[in-house]
Image (cartoon, rainbow, N blue to C red; front, side, top):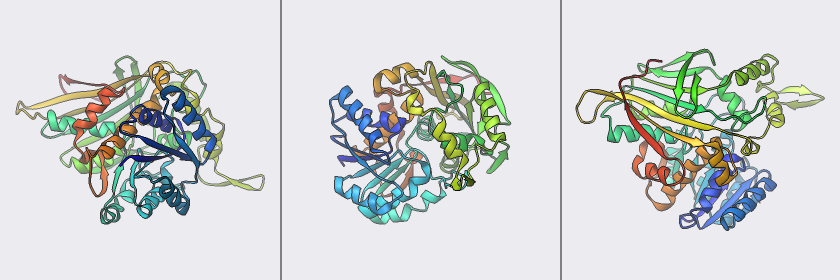
Length: 403
């Protein structure tokens, strides 16, 4: 595979395309398409300035399968990298099947009319991709993505089994805005306002959104309040590590974010059911997303670090009893912006999208069907993280963290 078509023109796409262009030996031909071609052109111009590499751009509605098929065939794409919205996953997968292209994304499918993101819709495509001799790789972002690879690296090199797992996502950056989201506002707010779920003793345990929290001291950030949430890698991690007794996902939010979000919820601005306004049907959350600052515009003003990782406890691989390991990455917003013109939240997703694509293009990872990150060898991916801007560290803790 040598010709790649990237769908989407937000901050994550910008990072991914920049990093692909910086690795032209792996990605000699890059095409970029989205609903708004001017956004693609802006990314292409930045890539040309920073790397000297050219990126071809196109206008496309990713939900129009025939148009997607035509574009894939027109550019001769072997791999389609889906960095659009999660509710566009299935149409893009359909287009890949019809056009004969491999597929990669960073977030699982979510219906437009329901804040429910689960893998079963995409897992149902396994036989179709297998019969077509094609590979679909799901969730090659940071969380999901790197967190899944972190977990499987620990299981390969440190732990025979994983009894408990806690994923900790901290964005310690300050963008100077009264209220803004660091990735697509519509998807961010749908995730945050959905009920929290975690895996425990073979079943899902549901709690109200943003009701369970704990303080945690994050290196190069400080102590932040982390809130229990549901995140899709819990579903795949519990599937591929059936011995796990408990798996949880925590994300930090500042007091100002919580205050603004609470007000927006109370006045109905986070709703996803259509309402009539001046004779037209609109969705409140989509209107809110349109007026909030664009995540890709926050890079220049955002200062500080992200710190994302996993704490896993289980039976040590060397037979020395139960042990706990903490594996994480710390990413600077300023460094991410200097390299790609984007803040670290986009960077930490866009770089793994590039690396996952590289795994497929080079044949390091291969298969026929639909696969999650947990099913692949973590070692080559981990090596590329160190080499391409997301170095990781692992430490043994004295014991499980008491959340």
